[in-house]
Length: 137
Image 1: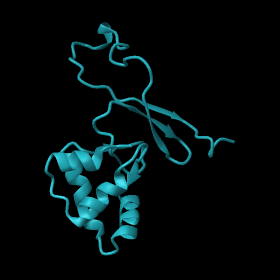
Image 2: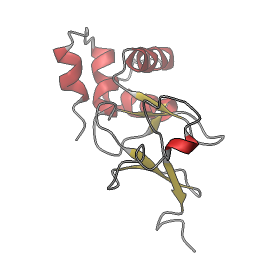
Image 3: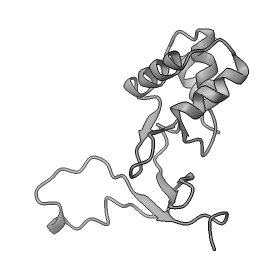
Image 4: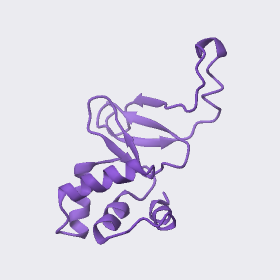
């Protein structure tokens, strides 16, 4: 389970009813919802929440580094609450489902010095692509 709500409380982020609902919708493992999906789930908990409030709250969460914005191909951006746990993503090419994965090894160490072209590499983003069991033929 992601610790998004706890992190927001610790940092003293003002948790209005709307912000709290957005954070609650995002909180959890393997949560990679689009803004529209966040809005749809938030409306179930707080019917008066507006789409603009959801978009603004997601933008703030990304800006303060508590949520990652995940872009995959030409699909809608998704929001990942596991911003403080190193992980990569497994993406289904059929339905777009995204799962967090933590493979063994260090992908940074796997990049030979000769392939770094003088760069000082600070982070690695890997996306594994395939087909989930629901989409498999």
